[in-house]
Amino acid sequence: MEKPKGKGHRRNDRPSGNRASGNKRGNERRNSQSDRREKSDLESKNVRKDWGSVTRHGAGKLTREESEDREERNKRTATRIPEAETPVRESSDRLRSEATEAISRAKGKKNPTRKESAKKRVPTPNVPHQLPDSGKLLRKLLGEKRGARAASLLGHAAREFEDEKFVEAQKILNSLDEKTFQVAEVVELSGLINYRLGKWSKASELLESFRTITGSTEQHPVLADCYRAQSNWTEVEILWDELRQASPNAALVTEGRLVMAGSLDDQGKTSDAVRILEKGWKVPRHPKDHHLRRAYALGDLYEKSGALPRARELFTWIRKHSPKFADVNERVRDLS
Image 1: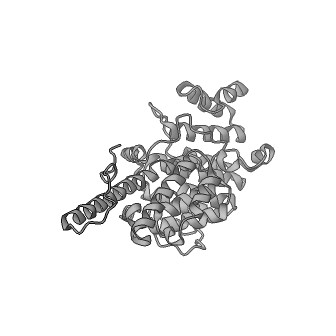
Image 2 (image 1 turned 90 degrees about the horizontal axis):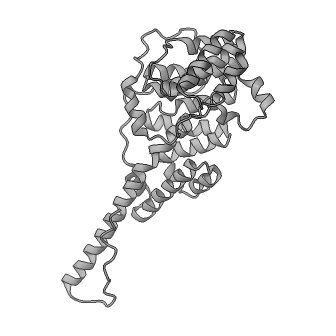
């Protein structure tokens, strides 16, 4: 990385009445400040490239259930959705590229019998809000020096989150000024940290705020999973409807579908959960991770409902394309 221009210049410690010399020092200070701003902007732009996908891959799967013992987990849900085989640190750029495979927007009429949300939500816009860069917004809220410091801390917290050091990441965010929680990236990261720590109520509060600030459905699967953990089935269903109608990209919609199916199964509605995962399912020729995850969840529900041949067929298909995917070899062996 290129060194900031302000560094490496030897400062003249003695005061000088020479206007040119004074201007030179002023220019150096301005250059240094400008470079610090550029560095802060780069850090803030890179902050969100990874953490969203890290947690979205956790929505509706073992991440939330790791705090429960195995017996209780098996009672709670049959959707033992595995960790992704591929590294979870895929960038948001890659996720955006999957928009080319986005499912077409739902054309069906809204269900008139659907329960109303207890939340007073403003409907999400067709296009998410265009927000200023987090570094610039932090400097606007806190001033130049404190804003740059906050942007640096935000980047540090994001890296700790990526390394699954959730408590450390939370401590960093807790040290920030309250004003920083007007910034989408701060609110989002804090919500995801609380989600990974199993603090469902706080996580849902923060991710609701993120939804309001951004007008985005990007964290709907995680938000829905927070409500699922609190047995708030109505909110899970409403968020799923909102996500599938927005249909941002195939991977994100799949995560929401997995949460909705898990919610139904939690309520003992296994057949409804199966229908959610079966709807629109076509065996892809070149499956991606979200295809494998959906197939795994569906196979798991088939096994639970007694449709063993179907379960074996799906697990065998997964093994063919990804032999090391979760415990798929064991599942095939048990069903053979």
